[in-house]
Length: 439
Ligand code: GUN
Ligand code: ZN
Figure 1: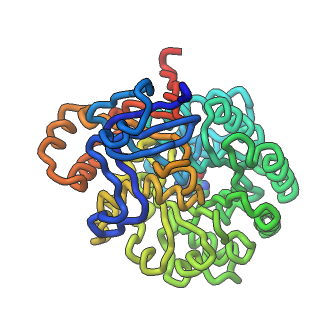
Figure 2: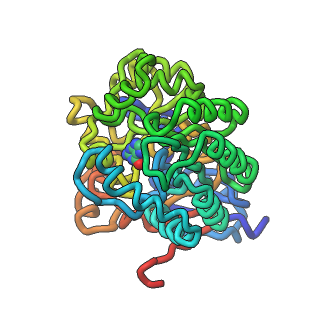
Figure 3: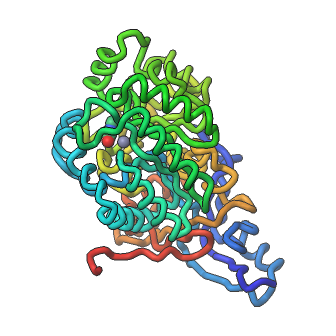
């Protein structure tokens, strides 16, 4: 038997479908004493430890994770790598926050050396938090995307990223043009899309910072390269929405701007999608476009509360995301905890089972990567994490008192953060994470 065959023993958890508000029977796979068998970077088998071990060669490499929870690597469906540098800046709302903090920081990514440095810090932070795949905004500078992809490729990560398109209503120093932005995006697609584990997203920042010409060019690219992603922001903040109405008075709604320019399709992911009506939500659902709910950002920037029930009623698929640096944490565990509170504020319910589904298989589905990540189905890529359920005294104490898996997961998403992520595995290998303070 190949020396690359490895068996990880621990409590195994993954999802096969959306448990919605049910008890998870039929959608959750949970083995208290489970085994995850990995070979050549892929899941070869998964199941109860005793039964599976009996079928494996006696000399297999066995890694015992004790009581740790083994689950698929967490997925973040909306994050800005340059905004690692702005988390916790100012308390103003979206448009002022962009003007006062974000644009000045993004300017610095015109320097490739700086972009390379922050890309490493960002990837270390993701991996420390157990996030193994993300849909990532870079900056308007093409070199920021090259720096990001090169860093992700060196670590063997599955990542999706794109060059920001913005040719108006932003500082001159961050502006591209419709032609240059499209040409550079095309060059990035040709250079990176489908290489290693990388994919490119066509990334108009949001409707206010693109001319109609630029949005049209983005739509043409999206049609020409259907396997690329579309990644932008939508209906986050009331002032932003009023501005879109002024800039595009002929369009029925903010969403209709993107629709008009051919930017709604499968693999289109729109962050926030808070202030929509049901016509918008149904239209997104019909096109296969998805929303990325970003609770820590929505609370930090005072943007509003995502409507889970209205989205479900319209069939609009949504994922969960950090939106660092409007978002205040890289941790998907903390993000799930805040999503739970957003639902509470709406008088709605996000069950802990559904929350963990969203951060794994649900987000993989948003990205149409459900056959590769977010699951332990045999054949999938072995990106996974070991979660230490005793990472802090309080977590250990609270979890001891829990009877059901749901109760445990709710405690984990309420108290957990990167301290609970003991190890992150990429393609079956333990990820190397640098402590930037030591370098
Ligand atoms: N809308 C346009 N740009 C941004 C951004 O950088 N962050 C957030 N949260 N919303 C945006
Ligand atoms: Zn964002």
